[in-house]
Image 1: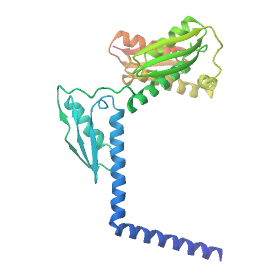
Image 2: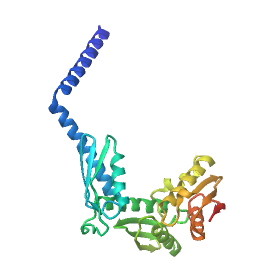
Image 3: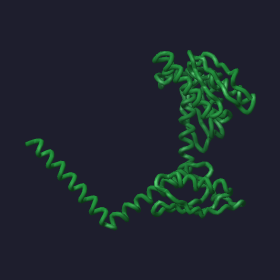
Image 4: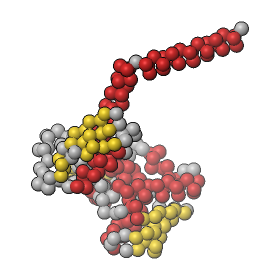
Length: 280
């Protein structure tokens, strides 16, 4: 009886779904509304990506989408920016064609910047804040730092305490070497209690056996390179064995090589750095 009821319910549900789908397909108004929602979603996705792009956000670009075709308009200073806008639109799921009406104007002057931060700038600042906090947590030399990190328009403010002047200076260096940072206002006060927060994060590289620790170290070294202004981490390979980090690849200068080695040495859990295969 119970089994029969379930079968009846299932059959009724399938029938209802088929009837609903058929009614939807037969109703032009419903189809139109669905397409309008899709168009609006795609327009928003394209515009949001423009807002996040440091190359496009300053331009007054407009986007409209209709049935999978995106129409772009506005002005940019260079051809490469016009092409970037097109490629971004084509990368959105469901966009099949792009009518790129963006005008390239060499003497184009972007609209005057608003006093309030744009959406993209707020995301940039949040990313910088998170990155600086992470670098301080990953560093083996910042145990004594209790800090609050705030970023506005690329300007980082550090507040809190440090055990020594050396720790305070290191925090300044780590923050200043972070991608996107314009300046650092280091208000850390020397002399204070050690950080109790994020203890688990700081000990993560020491737990779970050597393999886990090595994996953790490798990830943090790579991330540090990726977040750093003066090191191109994409050209550097990182491997860790027993806490010994091996760097290999090619860098542009001796200064970049020295910085990469120093950044790797600074990561918690690193015993030494083998850099003989890191060449200029």
